[in-house]
Image (cartoon, rainbow, N blue to C red):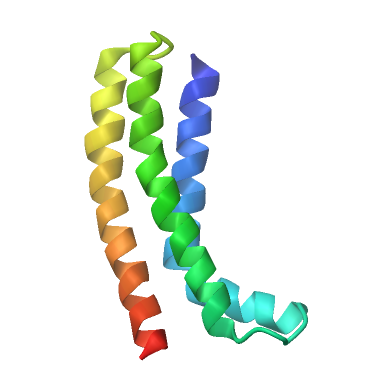
Length: 102
């Protein structure tokens, strides 16, 4: 059961880092990789991955509750708590990505 919680927390941390620091990560990747793609594509990729991880985490928590690998009380925390965090960070990262696209 602890592995499930650890996995869900790691998904949320990765999604948050990609959502909040996506612009900095896009610059970093652009500097250290081949400059064939503009930085805007890297930012878009990080934003999409972040939003998808935020959508997958509550779904995984719900499925783990159905399979009985997690208690019901934790599922509500994951779905509502991470949902609110995910909504805020996703809106911010989508806003930044939209500003880059013009």
